[in-house]
Figure 1 (cartoon, rainbow, N blue to C red):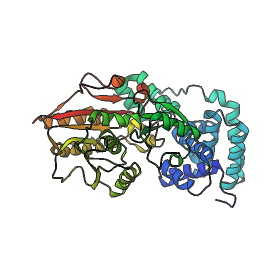
Figure 2: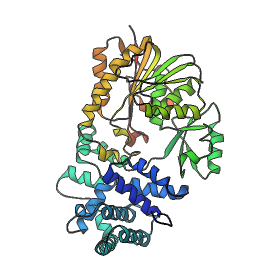
Figure 3: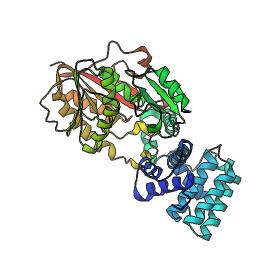
Length: 449
């Protein structure tokens, strides 16, 4: 990377290159690169914004490049293409970056990763963006409405079509826009160790912007964090990173002290640890997952939070093999993750239409197998971080037809501050565009016989 170490934009470029050519998740690419550089929290945050923003807006950025390069963006090497994407993103999407800084840094990178011709091209293209910025930001009109929305909002056309069919044009646009907003980091306070007020004061001293979450008294949103693991209180187990939407499934489960609870798909452990906190660390939790590697994260979180009532077991949830029945069972099933597009910048480019029926088969198998883990009178909660009907309502309908011993149960004591996410049947649904949190689905079923 050079004796002086790479610049922020070079680290961002390398992450983009690894994402495009090696298929790395952008989060993993950045994590690996950060281990090789001595960036402070501010520089890490800028590098992260550059990478996530450029990936999120990739289709729109490539359209801009196609207007300015005779042979189009695809004619460029991955290095030069991503240098230009980075430059265009800064010029068009980041008001705080001076035009000269974005252009000059891109030219420096082009000198290193290209040749004389591509250096000139990089300079010329970015200067054209500066001159034509206003026109390039006008609505795109190709004559194809789906294509126009896909280009303007930077999504695959199949997602645009799917959401229009499901939600209608207006709500689909709202979802597309919500997926392009950078969400805050949300943390759950370990109320057994510290109050939200004291943790707020502690994090504020670190220079973190802290705000309360209006749905949950034990959740906070934080900004300007840098590396979460370096924040005061993380190592001591004072908080856990977890979106509010994930907490809804646990609230619906309603774990009580002394109960036996099985978390069938527990990794990475956020819901497992919340269950333990709501049980006040009293009772028994069996945290399962198929992959032993993923279970290491569950163990690590439990150890950091000093939880003593969690047993971690490697188990295929489709063939559980547990000789035990629990008071409550949570199936937070593997899913397409379509409710978390804002948080996972590369997800929209990784997902394909065929992924949804494929994951639905797994979800059905998990629910079928988990039915036998619930004792009579016990409860089963099924949840996903998807907003797709096939993974949510269709799976619920399938399960209820096959298992007449279960019925959907609406909680009698559901908190009023959470009323906006629950329908008349008792099903919890969240949309990023409507509720300002990740998209999700959760339903509670009671085993009656």
